[in-house]
Length: 117
Image (cartoon, rainbow, N blue to C red):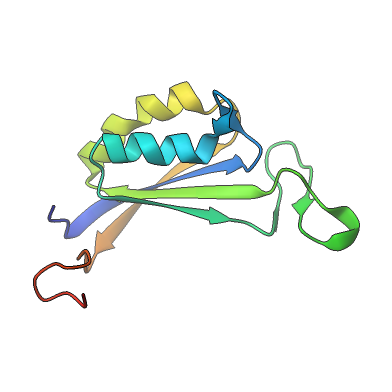
């Protein structure tokens, strides 16, 4: 797949204890993004944060949280990302989903011609 120039970055912020059919929600989001043929998805675990509930979640020893923030980042063309949004509506009951316009400079997989193997 070739991805270059204008693209859209979707970031879904959820909790690490959020689930979909007893599996971590972030895993289901990545699975569906892959099945939809989107260019890529990555999951990042936060060490501290808060959202709409205003409850601070942290990894600090004295206040260990069981619901740390997770960011799932997906990048592809605007058309493909927007087509994926209904799936997130089905999956995410609480959290935050944002879209950012980005410019892709380089998108090369391992083993691709000219890639760093």
